[in-house]
Image 1 (cartoon, helix red, strand yellow):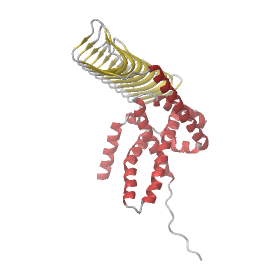
Image 2 (cartoon, rainbow, N blue to C red):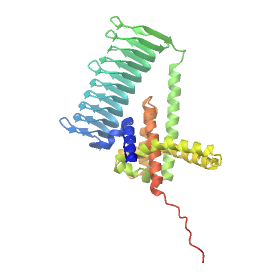
Image 3 (cartoon, helix red, strand yellow):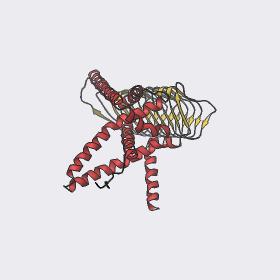
Image 4 (cartoon, rainbow, N blue to C red):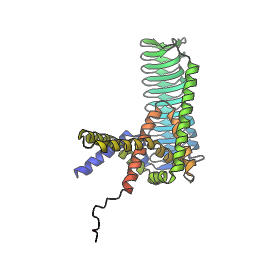
Length: 383
């Protein structure tokens, strides 16, 4: 009984820590060209949506997870939103947090908690209200409306023309305060140049400026873009080669997760536990001295599992997006393209990368468990 209670406690803890926990109780799973939750429709639970054009005009009584090209959320979401797309627009009411990544992200609705957004262009419109904190990373950021607590911005340029309840922290090339800016606390920023402040802007607290080292933004962005392109190409080529060599292995490792979303959580839990247990076991083997040869083999095997985890995660994502597709290489291409896109988005890349590592590691270990055959120690006697 104690073991069962401990297991339940561990599972509950992990589910509360990881964002994909809500998938286990998802009441709506949609994929295709234009997945939609129409106005007047209600989803009692989490909604997971993938497609080219995603439209959420109804009510989601849980969390919303989405990935696509164009995403519009005009309805009410009682939980959190986690979305990645080329264009994202949130005009409805969100009771929880929003975590968004895209080329163009626009928020003009009400956010009950905090907003974490990464994108090229970020617009927080004048009718928007973020009740807690706003963490924004992008090339062109505009913040209007109201933010209840702190604002953290990073990137090229940002214009703050909002009512901000507490402090502003920025690492930015160009920071500007609009005429409607009302900062309730302090401003602490690092930049190559001092901020510009329009007439009418007010700051209650102290403004602290740290001058950044002179740099050439254009060249820096060029090198960053070139590095990102090289990284994406390396990831894509490696993944496609793996798909060509081991198509059956990719299918067998991910098939249970495709059939049952609960298996995703199981794999992540296994990956989390293994990440703690395996290093401890290897350390124990090394301490015993006699177990060093086994420790070396275990280290190599564990590193291989970690390195391959991203491939299995990418293939799983591809299978979710292309449910009716059977071409292994095409499925891998789509999955790794999505992961590659996320990998160049600050903040979000670390978060998704960690979850990807957990899932891929756990999926491989679960497959090894299923294929494990108990050794036969009793050999037939020779006549």
